[in-house]
Amino acid sequence: MKLRKPAVAGIFYPSNCDELKASLEKSFLHELGPKKKPPSNEIISERVVLVSPHAGYMYSGPVAAHGYYACSYLRDLELIVIAGPNHYGIGSGIATVGGGVWETPLGRVEVDVNSAKRLVELSGIVDFDDSAHMREHSIEVQIPFLQYIFQEKIKILPISMMLQDMETAIDVGKAIAKCIKDKKFLLIASSDFTHYEPQEVALRKDSEVIKAILQMDISKLYNIIENLNVTMCGYGPVAAMITAAKELKITHGKLLKYATSGDITGDYSSVVGYASILFQ
Image (cartoon, rainbow, N blue to C red; front, side):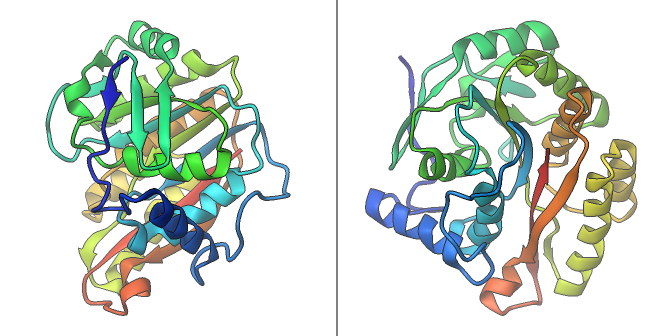
């Protein structure tokens, strides 16, 4: 079975198992985090869509922890689909993998081979391409959170999106919905929001983007990104997961937390925005 080694352990998060667990726990207990450790006692749907950031844990970990705390009540998940942007421009435009396991310092998670094959068959635009995933961090950084909250065996379906135009995102989202319609699932769209602008600019732009996401209005989302020149890196994965949610009659969205890197570092001159958004 093919093994995907972690690409950003020791960079985005600790490479030591105990240190990684401590980092995750710190994210949950952080003043910008949920301030409590999972599991949550709040019952949510068995079919959930989450927008989650993917920066280094010291910056976005507390915001990501809000989403994972909310999801920590979920049990008996059959599949976790994670779509993220392809930052490096390597490999196929839309890529999953044909199987294998992904490793982090917390252990290994298995790719759902059958779901990957079905997605490729249903979409017509998703390819099998390991190279698109080898260096990419946007999916990888979600996995330790999943291992921390679920612990028991989980299966993933990773989707790397270099192509993020609206038509492609909608096609991918519809294929995801068909692929998982009979399963208990968690769908994750991995994205950061505004990059390297002053705090007040990031807040203004990201608030408009978040409104469009909560309204599940994909056309509005793309118009805002273009008209306001929003440097959101994972708008395609977000649009794909909104599409899947709508196809599956998941319609209730909630902003769990928004913060910026400036809220962590105290430097508000050039920040990156992070949001945790839940649909159920």
